[in-house]
View (cartoon, one colour):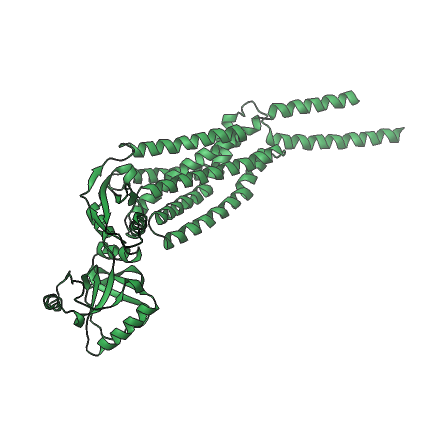
Length: 486
């Protein structure tokens, strides 16, 4: 009997140890002191992550200051800041071509022109509307888009117009040659495209055209320059019948590229390159004088865009909170922080001529906000799933800010790399969208590193109080069950 009593006593001791350990684990999670309140828990977490939160706040303030300072800021595109409208009218179509073909060429040229938010739409059977952001020279843009774009190379000694030849030999620029007064050996049919190349001369920067040729064009160029090299002959380069360069030939030019230097300004070179690379117009186009029009958002575009962004964030946060608890509102906070930082980055990028706040940038900002909301929701969902599986608040936070955050960072880096690559290999709307996405995803990566973990921990610090009463009641029920069993 004594042996049985000892064994029972040992069993009782083991059970007491187990209960003691269980109580220690519970104490680490549950609020036990009266002074320990949701507010105090939140304050403790905020203090623990104060460094990251302050760094995020500083970035947001810098971004907003840069955006709002009169000396900085970022210009608005047609829809937000107003535009100058030019009406283009087509005539003399080439056989087998239509207004749709002309519109395609105009859009290609607008994308290659190097300007921002240039919009071209068809408004009638033979009319097109060109919208240029306020502050741009709309007439120059229209002239660049509406030139025929027919390039020709001719030997200068083939020019039969004596007066024109005399002007060219005297170094005159912009001389127009009538059709039939010269013999081109190379035309646009053999030209594949053109790019702008900066050149320096005596401390000044000028721009040249690097023209790419197909095999037939390269062969014709090599043959002609081989003949002219011995006598240092000249070539006349004509665009729509007007001579834009008269290079002297010093040696035979082989290969499929030729550089045309004419002391062009950047705008001139970009206009020539757009005309050559965007395709030859299948018709003639006349243009009206520019007419200024107000922004489609009626002068409150910036405010409306900001309200829309905040509204989207709040709605996303409310929906996520309803499904995922306190953690869900991370989606709203993260998206607002990311968009604010992105606007600051775009303000800097404008200084390098990469963006304005036009259609492409707005689409990029919306996409950035949606991606940020998704990232916030995923982190909150990972946290909530861990809590539902019985993990403590701390362990659930570690799951969300550890494996889940690492996965999101990898995905964001992949999107950033693709966006940067697209920015290098595209033009116009696509390029501005890629630049904006790159800026947005880079801002997201900064926010994921600085803000998201801290915000999640602060937001969910009080979650231990959600289940404290239930856990206490369950413990009481368990204790009652033991008593009844006895």
